[in-house]
Amino acid sequence: MKILFASDIHGSAYYCKKLLDVYRESKAERLVLLGDLLYHGPRNDLPREYAPKEVIRLLNEQREEICAVRGNCEAEVDQMVLHFPVMADYILLVDGQVTFFATHGHLFHKDYLPPLKKKDVLIYGHTHLFCAEEKEDYFLLNPGSVSLPKGGNPQTYGLYENGEFTVWDFEGNQMTRLALR
Image (tube, rainbow, N blue to C red; front, side, top):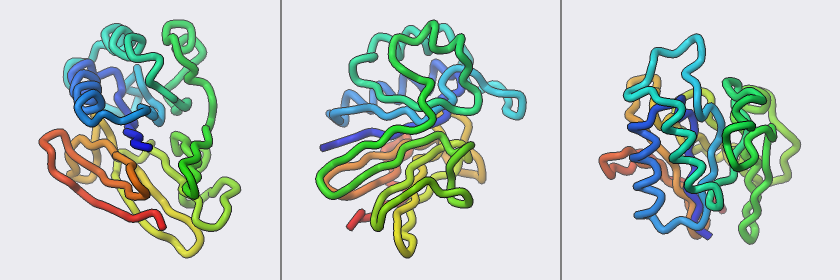
């Protein structure tokens, strides 16, 4: 299975379009959005081409492709305009022997782990910093931020395929890679 993971669009129509282009080109089977889809939040500057209504339209056109979780910037009103579920705190995805606990990261994260079995994968956004780390008993992944990266990082997303997770920027550069075995 091929899954594209992305987080923290924050209402940027510009980066939402880029993300959806990459999704189509990648031929991934599913787009998993890790929250903070529409609004920039009080601590962030406005992202490039901030247009939440356009992001709503773009994402709703792909509703059959999307699995999403609630970020700290999502509200019940977002569920009223988005035509796919966005209010779950987490989802579990299973591909063979790999189980992903996918969440935004404001509730569950590296310092407050959800219940994970040995070699499970915790994937979250929220920090706007990409990572791919193998811990003693689990894997820790973050695709970074689609529109508002931090720490001097570029805008990024993650791809999972055949037991491997990679983080890419929108210029086609691989930022990191990790085998989930």
